[in-house]
Amino acid sequence: MTIARAAKAAGVGVETVRYYERRGLVQQPASDGDYRRYGVEHIDRIRFVKRAQALGFTLDEVESLLKLQDGTDRRSIRQIAGNRLEEIRGRITDLKRLEKALAHLLSECEKGHTKHCPIVEAIGGK
Image (cartoon, rainbow, N blue to C red; front, side, top):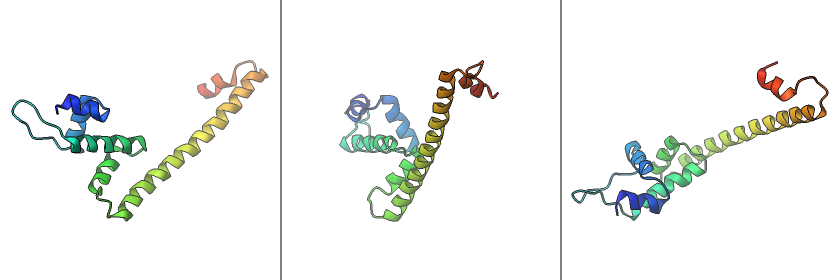
């Protein structure tokens, strides 16, 4: 199938397929003259990349996972996934801290105990 049909089947845009090819994440198929012909294996690979990204993996990590795709080096796979999980948990902690701070500022703004809204003052660094 053509790149447009392969992209549609994988749920991405044509430029995404081209970008993955440039990055070496998806192998460029052979040409039958004027067009490159993509097969099911290309679509599966594109979907793998997209699913990994949806789980928070970077493209560099996806590249490493693709090298380990046969699943036999579980230690390396666990290390990559564990590092990603640690980073995600750190972001969750940061977001919870931000949530608490913003909720406090919102509450203070609603109370109106100060001349100026504390949200604007906090953003302004005062």
